[in-house]
Length: 309
Image (cartoon, rainbow, N blue to C red; front, side, top):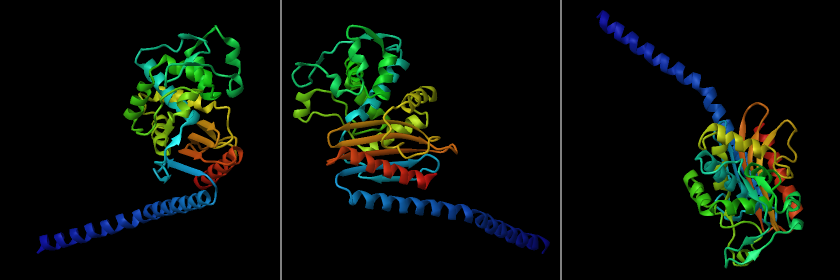
């Protein structure tokens, strides 16, 4: 009889503890639902803005704090423009880590490149490049480290082509696949008009850029030190007319832009003052007005920041 009573008491206690446990979890469940609803509202707002604007857009957003994600047209293929320079940087850092190259090695500055179509030669013009200084250094030698920095921070086309010639672009694409980016394809450097006319262009998607930037943000590409070194280079980007444009000065953004006629992109990592961070990819094409398109994307970036900060 005593054992039976004890058994009954034990069951009642266990049952009470379970109730207390679930009551304790209610605030966390409600908070998660609220966050989900916030993201749901944000996604609907962004979708409606995109539908009302002329052009084709893609958005990929991921909060690295709680994993909440917004994907809009994430698999749409876009001309990569200069966003392809981040994959090139990643491949160079991989080769440096493997001991295949040294960033202290130098390349001679020659303005002579070959088309992937027929091997014919072409040159780049400083008028079509965002980095004019390198054109004044023809014949001289510049370290790979300097070229990588110019490729990302100044979006130097000349530096990009020198580095692409130095490595095999097929290796870039293999590394992208290894990282889980299925639709980032780097076929060539910049200014290959014969390739452009034949539709042989570098391509990307918002989802794939999200994949590679998340690995950099989490320090999981090769190791945290290498990932962080690339993030620091991306933080020094001088073109800040999209993702960072309307954000507070104390918010750091490690990002890479891209633009050609009718196309404006930005892609990267946003670091909030409270230590949280998120990945944001904004892609566009078929724009009537490139400047207005960049302004539209900058306002989407601000909308996202206001919801997450």
